[in-house]
Length: 228
Image: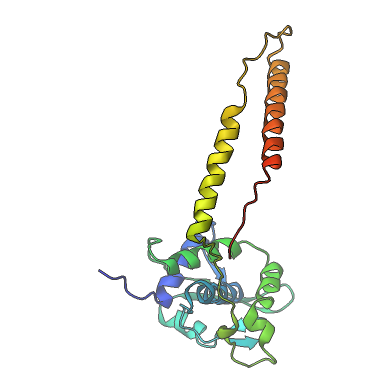
Protein backbone atom coordinates (compact mmCIF):
# COMPACT_ATOMS: atom_id res chain seq x y z
CA UNK A 1 0.00 0.00 0.00
CA UNK A 2 1.42 3.35 -1.06
CA UNK A 3 1.91 5.97 1.67
CA UNK A 4 -0.31 9.03 1.33
CA UNK A 5 1.26 12.39 0.57
CA UNK A 6 2.56 14.24 3.62
CA UNK A 7 0.56 17.30 4.70
CA UNK A 8 1.27 20.44 6.72
CA UNK A 9 -0.44 18.74 9.67
CA UNK A 10 2.09 15.91 9.42
CA UNK A 11 5.00 18.35 9.33
CA UNK A 12 3.63 20.24 12.35
CA UNK A 13 3.27 16.94 14.22
CA UNK A 14 6.97 16.28 13.65
CA UNK A 15 8.10 19.80 14.58
CA UNK A 16 6.08 20.02 17.80
CA UNK A 17 7.03 16.47 18.73
CA UNK A 18 10.68 17.53 18.54
CA UNK A 19 9.86 20.58 20.68
CA UNK A 20 8.34 18.21 23.26
CA UNK A 21 11.47 16.01 23.14
CA UNK A 22 13.54 19.12 23.90
CA UNK A 23 11.37 20.03 26.89
CA UNK A 24 9.44 22.86 25.21
CA UNK A 25 5.68 23.31 25.54
CA UNK A 26 5.46 26.00 22.86
CA UNK A 27 7.45 27.48 19.97
CA UNK A 28 8.12 31.10 19.12
CA UNK A 29 6.14 31.68 15.90
CA UNK A 30 9.16 33.36 14.28
CA UNK A 31 11.24 30.23 14.92
CA UNK A 32 8.37 28.07 13.66
CA UNK A 33 8.26 30.00 10.39
CA UNK A 34 11.99 29.57 9.86
CA UNK A 35 12.02 25.85 10.71
CA UNK A 36 9.11 25.16 8.34
CA UNK A 37 10.86 27.20 5.64
CA UNK A 38 14.10 25.22 6.07
CA UNK A 39 12.13 21.97 5.88
CA UNK A 40 10.80 23.10 2.50
CA UNK A 41 14.29 24.11 1.35
CA UNK A 42 15.79 20.72 2.26
CA UNK A 43 12.81 18.82 0.84
CA UNK A 44 13.28 20.69 -2.43
CA UNK A 45 17.01 19.95 -2.34
CA UNK A 46 16.68 16.21 -1.66
CA UNK A 47 13.24 15.31 -3.03
CA UNK A 48 12.71 17.94 -5.72
CA UNK A 49 9.62 19.37 -4.04
CA UNK A 50 8.46 21.39 -1.03
CA UNK A 51 6.22 19.59 1.46
CA UNK A 52 4.46 22.12 3.73
CA UNK A 53 2.19 23.50 1.02
CA UNK A 54 2.84 27.02 2.32
CA UNK A 55 3.58 30.06 0.19
CA UNK A 56 6.71 31.90 1.32
CA UNK A 57 7.47 35.61 0.95
CA UNK A 58 10.36 37.82 2.03
CA UNK A 59 9.11 39.61 5.16
CA UNK A 60 10.70 41.67 7.93
CA UNK A 61 12.66 38.77 9.42
CA UNK A 62 13.18 36.70 6.32
CA UNK A 63 10.88 33.90 5.03
CA UNK A 64 7.27 34.33 6.12
CA UNK A 65 4.05 32.52 5.29
CA UNK A 66 0.97 34.80 5.37
CA UNK A 67 -1.41 31.87 5.87
CA UNK A 68 0.43 30.00 8.63
CA UNK A 69 -1.04 31.84 11.64
CA UNK A 70 -4.64 31.48 10.48
CA UNK A 71 -4.00 27.82 9.62
CA UNK A 72 -2.72 27.18 13.13
CA UNK A 73 -5.77 28.86 14.65
CA UNK A 74 -8.09 26.78 12.45
CA UNK A 75 -6.45 23.57 13.68
CA UNK A 76 -7.01 24.53 17.32
CA UNK A 77 -3.48 25.62 18.14
CA UNK A 78 -3.16 28.08 20.99
CA UNK A 79 -1.26 31.28 20.18
CA UNK A 80 -0.23 33.22 23.25
CA UNK A 81 0.62 36.83 22.45
CA UNK A 82 2.83 39.04 24.61
CA UNK A 83 5.67 41.54 24.24
CA UNK A 84 9.39 41.20 24.78
CA UNK A 85 11.50 43.31 27.12
CA UNK A 86 12.23 45.48 24.05
CA UNK A 87 8.46 46.00 23.65
CA UNK A 88 8.31 43.83 20.51
CA UNK A 89 5.36 41.48 19.89
CA UNK A 90 5.96 37.84 20.76
CA UNK A 91 3.67 34.97 19.77
CA UNK A 92 4.20 31.53 21.29
CA UNK A 93 2.43 28.58 19.67
CA UNK A 94 1.06 25.54 21.49
CA UNK A 95 0.03 22.69 19.22
CA UNK A 96 -1.50 19.34 20.12
CA UNK A 97 0.61 17.03 18.00
CA UNK A 98 -0.07 13.45 17.01
CA UNK A 99 2.55 10.76 17.38
CA UNK A 100 4.18 9.70 14.13
CA UNK A 101 6.73 7.29 12.69
CA UNK A 102 9.76 8.27 10.61
CA UNK A 103 8.53 6.14 7.72
CA UNK A 104 9.01 8.51 4.79
CA UNK A 105 11.86 10.73 3.54
CA UNK A 106 9.60 13.73 4.18
CA UNK A 107 9.19 12.80 7.85
CA UNK A 108 12.95 12.32 8.21
CA UNK A 109 13.78 15.68 6.65
CA UNK A 110 11.26 17.45 8.89
CA UNK A 111 12.60 15.69 11.97
CA UNK A 112 16.27 16.38 11.23
CA UNK A 113 15.70 20.09 10.51
CA UNK A 114 13.52 20.56 13.59
CA UNK A 115 16.05 18.73 15.75
CA UNK A 116 18.93 20.83 14.42
CA UNK A 117 17.31 24.23 14.91
CA UNK A 118 14.83 23.87 17.78
CA UNK A 119 17.28 25.03 20.46
CA UNK A 120 19.68 27.09 18.36
CA UNK A 121 19.83 30.81 19.04
CA UNK A 122 17.44 32.84 16.92
CA UNK A 123 20.32 34.90 15.53
CA UNK A 124 22.09 31.71 14.41
CA UNK A 125 18.90 30.47 12.81
CA UNK A 126 18.30 33.75 10.97
CA UNK A 127 21.89 33.88 9.72
CA UNK A 128 21.51 30.39 8.26
CA UNK A 129 18.11 31.14 6.73
CA UNK A 130 19.39 34.28 5.01
CA UNK A 131 22.13 32.20 3.39
CA UNK A 132 19.74 29.82 1.62
CA UNK A 133 19.24 30.11 -2.14
CA UNK A 134 15.70 31.59 -2.22
CA UNK A 135 16.75 34.30 0.23
CA UNK A 136 19.95 35.05 -1.66
CA UNK A 137 18.02 35.48 -4.91
CA UNK A 138 15.09 37.58 -3.67
CA UNK A 139 15.31 41.30 -4.43
CA UNK A 140 12.92 43.07 -2.07
CA UNK A 141 10.50 42.51 0.79
CA UNK A 142 7.08 41.23 -0.17
CA UNK A 143 8.37 39.11 -3.05
CA UNK A 144 7.48 35.43 -3.27
CA UNK A 145 10.49 33.19 -2.63
CA UNK A 146 11.52 31.00 -5.54
CA UNK A 147 12.38 27.45 -4.47
CA UNK A 148 13.48 26.56 -7.99
CA UNK A 149 16.75 28.30 -7.07
CA UNK A 150 17.54 25.56 -4.52
CA UNK A 151 20.42 23.47 -5.82
CA UNK A 152 19.68 19.73 -5.79
CA UNK A 153 21.93 17.43 -3.85
CA UNK A 154 24.49 15.92 -6.17
CA UNK A 155 25.49 12.30 -5.67
CA UNK A 156 28.77 11.57 -7.38
CA UNK A 157 28.86 8.14 -8.90
CA UNK A 158 32.08 6.41 -9.88
CA UNK A 159 31.75 4.10 -12.84
CA UNK A 160 34.43 1.73 -14.10
CA UNK A 161 34.74 0.17 -17.52
CA UNK A 162 35.09 -3.63 -17.74
CA UNK A 163 38.79 -3.14 -18.52
CA UNK A 164 39.29 -0.97 -15.43
CA UNK A 165 37.47 -3.52 -13.26
CA UNK A 166 39.85 -6.17 -14.60
CA UNK A 167 42.84 -3.93 -13.81
CA UNK A 168 41.59 -3.24 -10.29
CA UNK A 169 41.21 -6.95 -9.62
CA UNK A 170 44.77 -7.52 -10.86
CA UNK A 171 46.00 -4.75 -8.55
CA UNK A 172 44.21 -6.39 -5.63
CA UNK A 173 45.88 -9.71 -6.37
CA UNK A 174 49.27 -7.99 -6.64
CA UNK A 175 48.85 -6.31 -3.27
CA UNK A 176 47.82 -9.61 -1.71
CA UNK A 177 50.86 -11.40 -3.16
CA UNK A 178 53.22 -8.71 -1.84
CA UNK A 179 51.68 -8.91 1.63
CA UNK A 180 51.86 -12.71 1.54
CA UNK A 181 55.61 -12.52 0.83
CA UNK A 182 56.31 -10.48 3.95
CA UNK A 183 57.83 -12.60 6.72
CA UNK A 184 55.72 -13.01 9.80
CA UNK A 185 58.03 -13.07 12.78
CA UNK A 186 57.23 -13.78 16.37
CA UNK A 187 58.16 -10.94 18.72
CA UNK A 188 61.35 -11.52 20.61
CA UNK A 189 61.11 -11.94 24.38
CA UNK A 190 60.98 -8.65 26.20
CA UNK A 191 63.36 -7.96 28.99
CA UNK A 192 61.13 -5.19 30.33
CA UNK A 193 58.07 -6.25 32.27
CA UNK A 194 56.06 -3.05 31.69
CA UNK A 195 53.19 -4.17 29.35
CA UNK A 196 52.74 -0.68 27.88
CA UNK A 197 56.38 -0.50 26.79
CA UNK A 198 56.14 -4.03 25.39
CA UNK A 199 53.13 -3.08 23.32
CA UNK A 200 54.82 0.07 22.02
CA UNK A 201 57.84 -1.93 20.88
CA UNK A 202 55.60 -4.45 19.16
CA UNK A 203 53.76 -1.64 17.34
CA UNK A 204 57.10 -0.21 16.23
CA UNK A 205 58.06 -3.56 14.64
CA UNK A 206 54.71 -3.83 12.90
CA UNK A 207 55.08 -0.26 11.60
CA UNK A 208 58.45 -1.15 10.08
CA UNK A 209 56.93 -4.18 8.36
CA UNK A 210 54.17 -2.00 6.94
CA UNK A 211 56.78 0.49 5.70
CA UNK A 212 58.55 -2.33 3.85
CA UNK A 213 55.26 -3.31 2.20
CA UNK A 214 54.54 0.27 1.13
CA UNK A 215 58.01 0.62 -0.35
CA UNK A 216 57.46 -2.53 -2.41
CA UNK A 217 54.13 -1.18 -3.64
CA UNK A 218 55.82 2.06 -4.63
CA UNK A 219 58.40 0.15 -6.64
CA UNK A 220 55.63 -1.70 -8.44
CA UNK A 221 54.28 1.74 -9.45
CA UNK A 222 50.70 0.70 -8.88
CA UNK A 223 48.31 3.48 -9.83
CA UNK A 224 44.62 3.65 -8.98
CA UNK A 225 42.51 5.55 -11.42
CA UNK A 226 39.11 7.01 -10.72
CA UNK A 227 36.64 7.49 -13.53
CA UNK A 228 33.94 10.09 -13.01
